[in-house]
Figure 1 (cartoon, protein in one colour):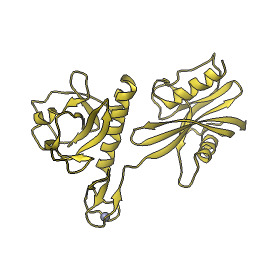
Figure 2 (cartoon, helix red, strand yellow):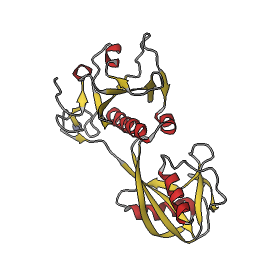
Figure 3 (cartoon, protein in one colour):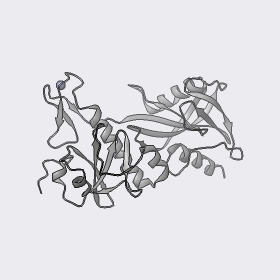
Figure 4 (cartoon, protein in one colour):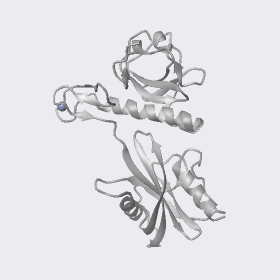
Length: 271
Ligand SMILES: [Zn+2]
């Protein structure tokens, strides 16, 4: 079987044992509630689609992703749809990893079809997971955006906030993107001061998580309260206050979100 490089495939180059994740207009296509399609689906789609993006190997099966063009319609192809976020909340961690990585790669490809420097079209790199400008040879690799997420604690208490752009009424940790030139610890100090007006220290890295909406790397920290009064910025944070274990609001699940895991780890440490 002809496979010209490792990361970009024509539909006709599939070996037959791959699984395919289909995207259309930002949603994942499902059949019988499954989002991993057998590679025979590419025959049902009647075209040598390109490129299929290699997502990775999950449970010893190679998974590829295909983003169907937004004007794609096909009367004889009945499907259900789900957003990648819906799948996050409904599926297990392995599924989430596959869909999350596919979502990041689809977004990356979609945003780099033309060179940001000279505007010429890009083309897949021969060996790497990269797109190359056909005019100036600029290389574009998938970009990851680092963010910090922090649980600020004060003795037995911890700070949770209602985020303005959050989903529903979940109270969660503070979070923010790293600025150019910052260390993650500096981001923690800056974000906590900006969002709720508090000074923090003794910043300890705990764990990380890929958050594929579309390409964040969440770096999770604990930080100790060191001074100041809570004053929410009103822009990103609507409300924030100190909580205790016996007085929890609605918090994110620890199953998948690093915010929920930080809260759970802190509560366990106080038992
Ligand atoms: Zn260029």
